[in-house]
Length: 64
Image: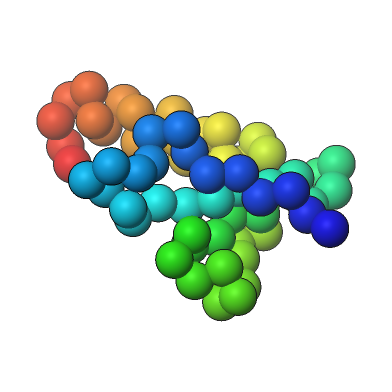
């Protein structure tokens, strides 16, 4: 069984979030917490780190 984890920043006024889980040593799963049976995106940990870092940079610049 996969141990899906929801962000500690979710909840309260913002129920929209994603869950993540380690599928195996080379794969992280990401899914919609509102539709856990709807499948998941499988992504390499390095690619996920790069995507999150890019998002944080754009947030700092006010791009989003």
